[in-house]
Image 1 (cartoon, helix red, strand yellow):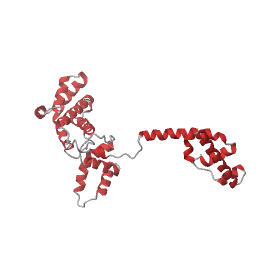
Image 2 (cartoon, rainbow, N blue to C red):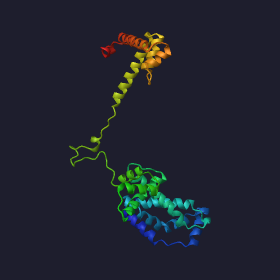
Image 3 (cartoon, rainbow, N blue to C red):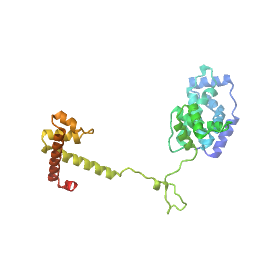
Length: 288
């Protein structure tokens, strides 16, 4: 990271660098593109560093070091020089502006917060234009409610109102560490992490439930062996399917009355219960 004296020297050098006339700029660009003339590249970039510094000043409100913004802008300037096509008869400053701004914006998005925001073009537009649009709408003759303001911003930038509200809340304050204490006495205070509650079961409870479920499935499969074909069919459709068949539908399917289906079901359940208790004493208390 560039220190403050070095940054001041850089700014001073950039502001005293001579402007390039169109013909000179074109000749330097041709020398760089065709012969990779380092001196030509140096003259082009030095002459346009004032553009980098000017653009960096527009992003100072995001609270990042000015020296870092200038360095990132210089990276964008070099990228522009590498891609510039002098035969198109476009001034280099016009072409380089996009690359400088893009480089700075990417740096801001990576470093402004430890929480990464959206990287789509719409999300970037929201991040860099929300404050400006809010200020503009706040100056309107008729005061707008927050929902109305969010709605107009979402329509202007092509993003959802929820995205606008979320971004607004993020821009309203700095990141807060979960390790931050509530008092100055760190040895006797609580952190924000202490007040986070997770309602989900503990991992050992989840594993225990999974093991118990698998064990019961094995026991049931073994116990089903005591049933005859019709009993097994009724139990499977009445008790082991998600949509549990009705007594009436099973009676029609088997050609018996629904009362007879109920009797067979109860007898099958008694047989299963007896088999489970006999073969697995650990489950005897469940049916006590």
